[in-house]
Length: 247
Image 1 (cartoon, rainbow, N blue to C red):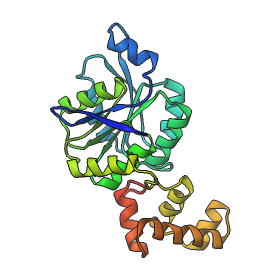
Image 2: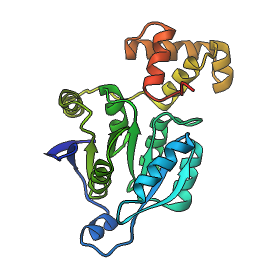
Image 3: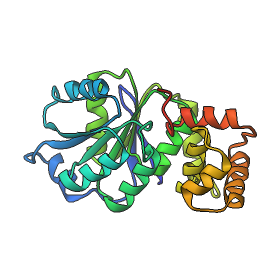
Image 4: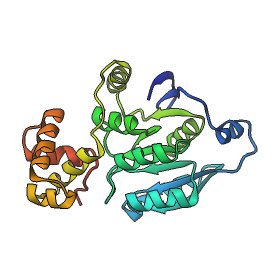
């Protein structure tokens, strides 16, 4: 994804996405279209209720459904056809990054806004590279939420002001630079998640229906790729990236 910094909004940083807007986005900009349809994805019911409460106070925004995990989110996107998904990365069964990747392929016009506790470079960069159009840090105001939704609906990308300018600059540098590092593959994320959940190598091999040697290779590549050389470090990384929940 190539992002061009367009402006610093009063709330966060807005980027102009390269590529055409879809017909609904273009028409809505001219007025007269139905409300922006939003799906909320978070494993905590109270969090979903809080997001819904905020969204119901925004004009031209309609919450059409809520999902508590990755598979339910994927199902509801197919069923209800939202325009925007607002989701946490730390969801169960199918992690947030994989959900974004799948939706980017199956529903290219759908926009995903991440709502996370974390504002570090890796969390933001991985989410955006996976295909997210926006990144909000929890605790945002209703005004910032509205700016993010409007920006994403216009075909732009929004990053919360809690994400520091150096992090944004570094993300852009890596995105534009040839040979920039990519997110982990879906299988690497699976292996990392199972390691972080305490699964032994043989258990992971059985779970994924691969050989023990394959799992050992994945683990070695993960440690090299992330520059993390022990299991506790991988666990901390997986928690920070939303691959597993600390609950």
